[in-house]
Amino acid sequence: MARLPYLDKDDLKDDDKELLARNMNLHRILAHSPGAARSFGALAKYIRFESTLDSRLRELTILQVGWLAKSPYEWVHHVEISKNFGVTDDDIRALATETEGKDSGLPELDRLVLRVAREITNNGAASLEAFDALKMQMSSEHVVDLMVTITFYNAVVRFLASVGIDVEDSYQHYLETYPLPE
Image (tube, rainbow, N blue to C red):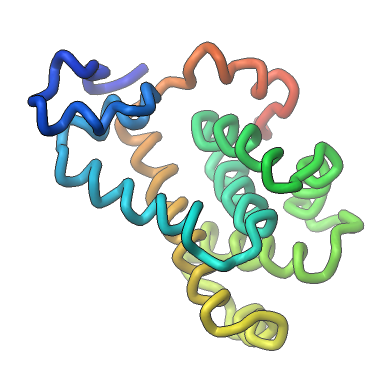
């Protein structure tokens, strides 16, 4: 249950109404601080639309963060988004298998970016070994964009949990199809 009221466009100043162009619970809470909402949105926009990092890898790492954080909101929104970028049902099942330390059958680079997402989420930083392995397979730009993506979404899941943002009804079915770990 949300710890702040969800705002609607009528609750905002005219200059801030565009913050709710997408009527999502996350935006309805962020709108309490228009400056924060705009800054949050700018980095999210870069990650999703401007980064040259492979979109499928980006979505896999975001899903990994959501899975580890057991963040229903992040998980369901990015399960839906990830499907638009080539993530399959098999990939989602493999992510869970990979997280358990079992052979997922995913390609080497997929396993590596998921490992880095787990290390950053669980330990606060990527290991030198994993970071060096990334540098062997990605450009420096992509390594930085991957780090920014993982760390940004670690902040997002903590924000979601701290303010208690609810999953919208239209996304609930993803929790049934792709349940988070207990």
